[in-house]
Image (cartoon, rainbow, N blue to C red; front, side, top):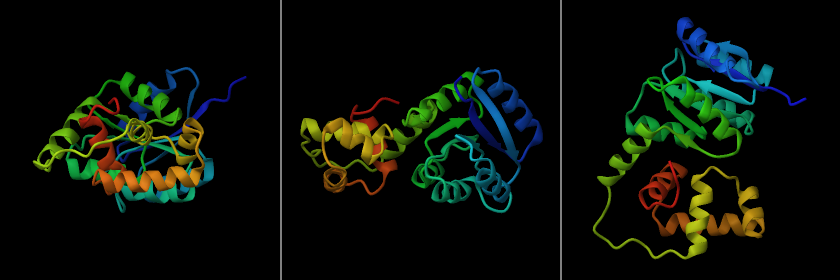
Length: 214
């Protein structure tokens, strides 16, 4: 028998938590094992219950959801975090992606999209809802220079696609038949070549250049 996907909900509004819980538990194989109303409680309950996925709001009491995500992923790097927020500001989305979360869904989206996002991140890929993808691309367009884009080999394009999809270095190494050290070295050189300083930058670049799908 397949083990259920254990999920923790983090939101400071009880009625929102109740609604999301009903939506998620309508999906076969999903089990909401705990809820939290603030960042500190989220970190504590994640350490106690070890969920597969944390659905995280951003605006919480004490510490925001992004800092809570950093703390959770530092202690439990295999946990997948999907942000569920009304926040669309590019700088906030960037902070969230840089913290290591695997998905970003807006609260205005239908419940089916949150379920789809969770299924996606469980496979090791990123999930960004269409509105957020558009927001990032538009924000990035203000920083585009008139310089010709760097010429990339097919292997470099493939590597960008894998990184933007959320694959870890070990998984990329297996797909490309390389050592993990080679992947790390190639990744570092590639980030420098395309002038990206973070995975969030690389995701925006990959989406803009058509090297990854939203």
